[in-house]
Length: 465
Image 1 (cartoon, rainbow, N blue to C red):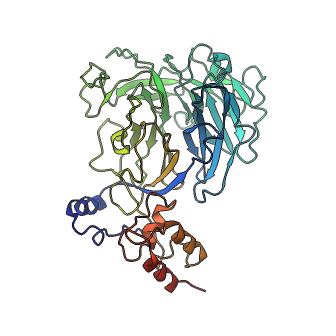
Image 2 (image 1 turned 30 degrees about the vertical axis):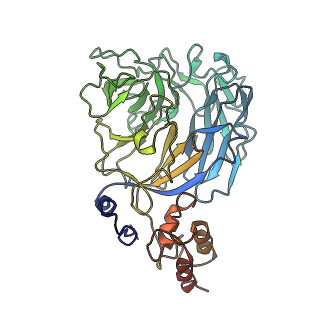
Image 3 (image 1 turned 90 degrees about the vertical axis):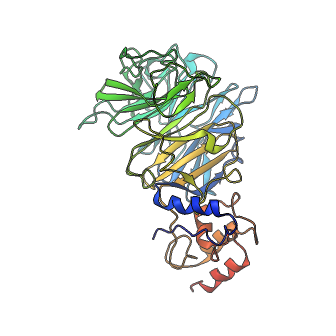
């Protein structure tokens, strides 16, 4: 059953908080159910985690190197249900890079992880996409590209020879009943077209000379940073959503390799916050423009998600500089018409109360996102604090009794272990340290916002032989 725990007991004397938490019950919200600490692995796989994808069981997290020398970045495989189960994808995910190099995008498909790195050796010749077997960590040897010399690594993908491959990597689902035009999509800084390579061998399907034109060429408006791509993602019908600098743009698909129109979903401001003439004029969400800021990401959330309030959504980070800012100030949600949905969709704690900086600490605004349709989860990767947050489109689910925190039909040692992870003592909130936020909600038997011996006694009374 769906369970949103009452906050009435813990919030006496804080009536405004009560009203907010109670009002949120009617909204389509995303509840934080997991917080996974990645800091033990970043280092060894890079100074910070930069990009994330998932297969529904495991998350795959690509690293970033900020150190002023040549060193290793890699890819972490971490079980979303049991974070103790984590390992580096070796040797396929390890590579030597210079300072400020990182994995720009990850795509999972049918047991293979595709990983893009822009100029790891400092030149366009070293830009590559790797195909890695997620079970073994080995490179998929047949993935060798147009020249059949990569042996699991495609260099200069889609014949990209003169631009930074910093527009991300995405799975293009194709167009129409036959899904024509599917493959691994690449967008590059300064290129008006997207490149596409095939899944099996990494050979070019469409190059940056003949791929579909994702930059707005309608003539209806002109912006200076029209092809300053930083990330992109596809809807199921093949429509492309891209980060153009710090803006969000939609390119509407009309064929396997065709775009029929463009919509600018945000309105640009100058870097000082003053208005700027832009294709998105009149859109309710205004963002500062910054063409050369890395880490401007986005993700598509389908209307089928329980948290999406019946509308296709775009989640993105408003990152126009590197200043320290709060999660709430950076992470934004809009629908695919460009309308702000903050009044109907919120990011909340597992118990339905608002997030705060103890759980989602402030940082430099660099987040990556991945929607997991298998579990209806939204993964949010925090570069600064080396955390992976798992938000559920539904409120936490508890068993019967609620002490069956893993909802497997009994109260046993597994539930005891979850309680121990949550326990901080009287008047000490379980967040931010507990891994499984949803389990803590279920185990808070007296609903007082902490896990202590009173809650332990309630669990023991319900232990089943």
